[in-house]
Image 1: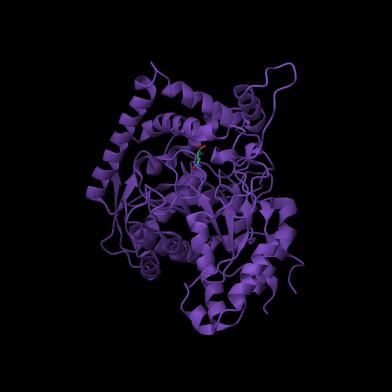
Image 2: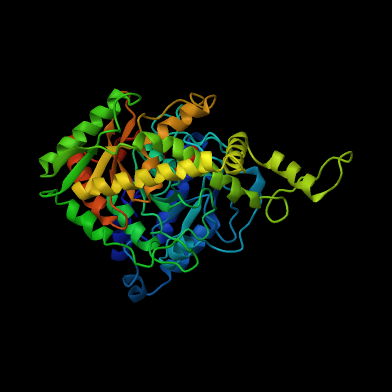
Length: 512
Ligand code: GLN
């Protein structure tokens, strides 16, 4: 067996190929990653729970299959994966990083988990996030703070900072995230990894803990574009248990990614989103982004600037629509059905309403409470039209902007995040500052279109920058081709993949 460092630095596709060739077993891969998790977790803290026993059992069950059975399974068969703790896993505690769900063991698997199990992919554990996926730094987790592997004094982004950090730190080759306003893509950008938000409805949300149902989408986190394509084809497709699921199979994303690796983009029309730049965008971010655009041009793409005039209003619309849906979805945590129950003190009437009030007061953190209050207000009689109604109208204008843009171009591009990874505490005192950096990712959620972030190199501060591609609805493959092309072109520029240049000190001493 190759040493641990060599193994965990393979791409997921390479791991899958090595398994198929019989060079490595799924169990060996699981053990290698568990070893790295043990070494990395004191400094990274990406996981809320490591499911070592379950992962080993799943790997052994896969390894015991016949060669014929294995050959018929997907390319990623046997490759381990980490799961954001916003997705329910049968028999494994699922908390959404909230005290209100502490100790809750789901009696069922999300559809995506069933699909991973059917593909023989062992689950390494549950990753950290902002409580109920609400935040952009993972600092709002009720349990722990995840550190960015590139600089452990900095945040990994959020809400899926755990999944992105685990993948960046070589604790897992792949992870699942959820993206309601950027929670897969922005942490991907801040940790130098790939993050994909599929078309709304392209991947089943059955078993994804609901945050804002009209925006939520499960998607892949990986180190390479091809790995995300392979994973999205496994988890995607119709599910009758999700009423918003698109009645169609996954798009040909793997073929598109492989096509992109040939670095020929002749005839591809790329639209540069005019509104995503300037004020509030770090110069280092814009520099790397512009270099990426030049590379696309060098590979034959026709790049033009495209205006989406209502984009600047997307933050305002999102931060009304999202909390409105949060206030409704989180009403189910009432102390009756799941997790925590706090009874009122003896001097307070022992009513159901009081029990719920005490449970919710103790169980929810400040950011979640802020959004529940905001959303309840926006939906209340007399204010509904002014707030929620107006926000929905703005959403329609944004959807129309995208439709018009896609009449002119095949794919849209912009920076994934206006900033690189920031220091702990830098934005927690000012919710508006935390919300403001979501401007780049939120539009795709409002419009339901697929979007992905790939690493575009390092900024002057030595931290990763994300390059975002946005494609038309139900055309996810369209973004995979240029993303894979740019990834390949940038490897020359950066002497290999950007994620490989991470100084992962915890891997020292792991080799044997
Ligand atoms: N940062 C966004 C928010 O706080 C994203 C959330 C998400 O995608 N889950 O709402």
